[in-house]
View 1: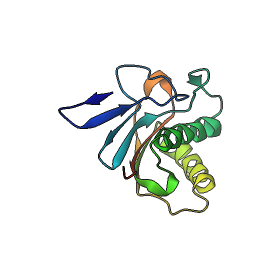
View 2: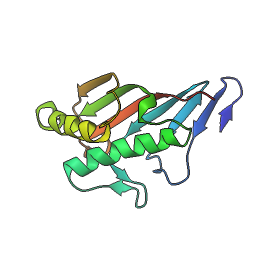
View 3: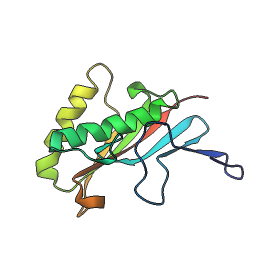
Length: 134
């Protein structure tokens, strides 16, 4: 869907998760793709996956797959913002998963924030900005 006044296209790629509310999965504005906060939701069942590591990994996968629908890859991430509900517990897992996923490309700039709660009592959410020239 495109808003002609803003030159922004809102994204809902086939096979992606279903939004849990009044928001879009991502948007494209010019050469940039902005992926909304992704959680560890299985796109087949649209439910949270079990296990902290699996859930965090799935959130990253969801984000990258949505950006990939616009031709972006891990090497195209401009910035990440990560939200966790317990910094001491989840930051090491986030770092471990990022080491696995970004095994052959540089790490993007990242901000990690501890928040008091996330939707559906989740533990982790990640949002990303990607450079994907049209």
